[in-house]
Image (cartoon, rainbow, N blue to C red; front, side, top):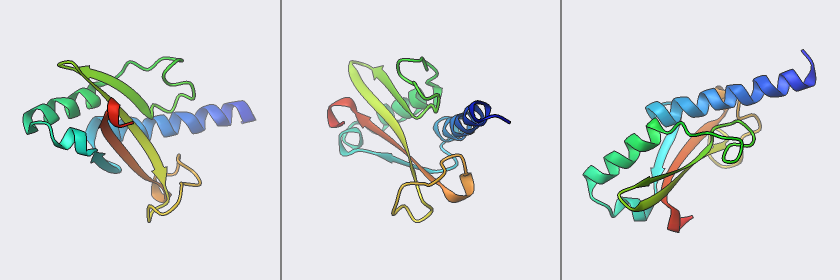
Amino acid sequence: MDVAAENIAYRARIAQLNDRLRQTFWGGKVMMTPGLQELPEDFQLRVFRAVAEFDDFTADNDPHGERDFGRIELDGYRFFWKIDYYDPECRYGSENPADANNTTRILTIMLASEY
């Protein structure tokens, strides 16, 4: 496999793992910021559902094809979600985000104003 094809496969694997976490909240940790925590629980659930259903990835908002960031709006609130990659102990960045066994994914959902 040539280098370009390897890079495409590498990013596709990262996107697959990120989609799994975002859509099912399985395969990593999910965090929310204090601003989101202060909103009513039923609204928080709607935000989580909107994140799980997000599929508006474009070259502008996903230039590397990893599906690791998005923006949603709900009832006049703007939210960002972001997936970061850490080592298994969450002390350092992951050396290989495509390796699910040696990467801890953290999905953070926040009010855009908290970014």
